[in-house]
Length: 368
Image (cartoon, rainbow, N blue to C red; front, side, top):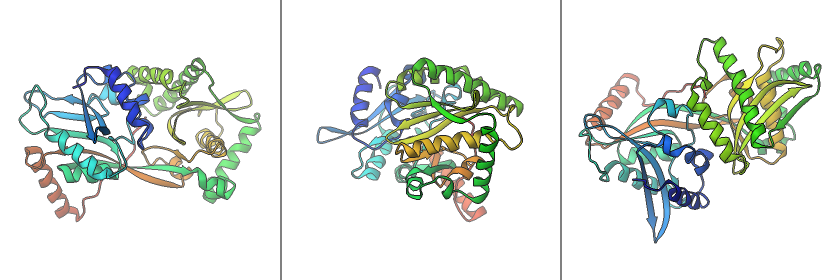
């Protein structure tokens, strides 16, 4: 159990510097408001020859009457987990990675924890993990695959090789982008600006949130920023990440008018398009503020040598139109094979195979 979050942060960053990981696995994200988001934190650490080879931070949830659950990188409380982690996973060295992940997950399932509770077998909740984690989970216990999402991305290296982003897109997408750009340019030059200070970034976030909420309200839905803890987390994250240049708050304008804002994470030469807000009310029928904003951002990042522009999970039409490839992320729960929940998962899988002849996951979209 974690008794000193500051010390954990130091050890986490030391391992983070030695392994492949995503922004969502970095201490910049994981450590943001950690004492609030992890009220019962459990750290798992693997060592080989005196050197740490893997780490994971879980939050423990459960009671005497409910199964004990360990949530990887999450709290297990919807109001706190609305920040929606993706590209999640254990920090682990590349050498024998799958075996290391399997051993760590097996330990997380079985190692004793005090106080002992929940007589139904411990469960691990892994959200937004890659195929290596899915295979390790299947080797460690009984897996209930809740859903699988595609995460479209743009290969910026391919853009540089072709010489133009438009050349890698479909004819219809090229037509829409060019038409939208012409319409906006009639109002004034299209330009993209990155917030240079923490104060300016907070201002861009506020403007983005207002536009985001307008869009979701018109659909009769709450929107991400309706949750005050979502906004609180990201205000704190900007303070942590701006000095490291790990967040980009971008304003996209046509002349003096802002057509939208993008909130991106920037980590190890990759960009993650996390959140956005666009002025749809001011847009004409042929103006596409979202497509235009992402188009300008992608071309800017490609020119800067960025490796990829990741749209994160979901198969929204604009993501599919602008992307050049996709990865898969999985949301799953792992139980010991001998537990009641593990046996139930086996029965569910068997029924699924009998009914459909396969054991595929589901795909969908969740707003961030």
